[in-house]
Amino acid sequence: MGYLKSAYLLKLGKDWGFLMFERKIYSKLLKWKKESKGRTALLIEGARRVGKSTIVKKFAEREYTSYIMIDFAFASSAIQNLFKDLSDLNYFFLQLQLQYGVNLVARESLIVFDEVQFNPLARQSIKLLVADGRYDFIETGSLISIRKNVKDILIPSEERKLQMYPMDFEEFLWATGDTQTPKLLQRMFDERISIGDEQNRNMMRKFRLYMLVGGMPQAIKAYIESNNLETVDQIKRDIINLYEDDFYKMDSKGKISALYDAVPSELNKHSSSFQISSILPNDRKDSVSEEISELNSSKTVMTSYNVSDPNIGLSNMFNKDKFRLYLADTGLLVTLIFKDKDFTDNIIYTKLLNDKLPVSLGIIYENAVAQILTSNGKKLYYHTYYDKKQKKTYEVDFLIAKEDEISPIEVKASGYKTHKSLDMFSKKYSGRIRERIVIYTKDLKIQGDTIYLPVYLTMFL
Image 1 (cartoon, rainbow, N blue to C red):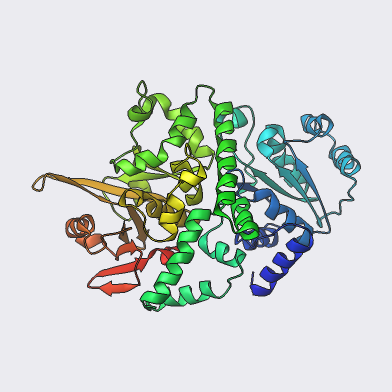
Image 2: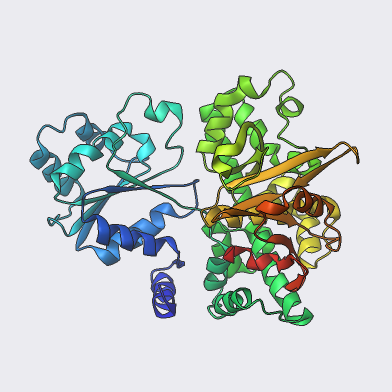
């Protein structure tokens, strides 16, 4: 979508009393509609509050003659029960039209199963409904794949899955009315242009603000409307509380919640792997494998796996028992770090906004890089290795593969002139390396065989 559509959506949202942000996923919805022609349903999966329902509703309103949106979190028992018997689809569709007061038009109407995890039978029905061919179908949901939501149903092969993430830095800039900066940043990356210290400081201020606010649409809306970070922080606390309520519904013993809350402290330890025993003293990874799986299924975290032999086939080389967890939204990480303190006691906002972040909070930049790579469709991998001569463990924060080579990435919030782990890795695996990348807070520069990339350009990797 171009600038005109973005401006139109923003204006339309304001006219209707809310902010409608441009989201990149919209173009993927259009692509699915054009290519599928009703032969597949689209399942949009993501954490709660990332904006799934909002973007699908806008898509339905703008791209179809009519639509029905069934929110299974609140749908009546009459609607819920329709999915128990689909032997007569004419009756089924007639009932939907009567209940919602909507006239469905063959091949011109969309039916949305919102929060479909609350009615697994509705998800199973997709096979039959897509085969019928009259209408298009989109499902949205979170906690889609946890055991209780899939154990008694046949997962339809007609589903095409699409992941939705919090708003990225480019979408954040669009939301704040800045449509030109992303174009300039793309040129800066493509042509390897340095912009100078002053312009870099300006860009870093924007990126630090993005890290503080985060990518949850509610938080961005609160920032735009109030220009008050305390208001934004309260919105983020509400989202974290919502997640924790979900975790306790999944696991009344509180193990999932404890694992989620421990993400900042575990990142700060810089351990070679997430230490279950330090969080749950009576457990080990194998005893909480289901809880870890369900935490991953919630899409509230991102998992980075250790690769023992870094090579082009990273997905075949990782150790599933050795991993790190990041929060799916860096803004939520900022709030979670000081969850037990009042906002007025939370120095992190002032420190980060003014570029005076303590070294111990460099994990915020690392989490931001993880979030950007994930939203770009890249799986997260890292590498640790022990040097017997040095008697020291080195680690590379992230690895990305392209063609037949890999690029090691080291993230630096400070002290960017030294990158011993990257140097040692490059020496050990010299024949496999495409590009050495240091992601940091200064201007773009190339020095020898290393590219120093300001963190706001990570989105172009």
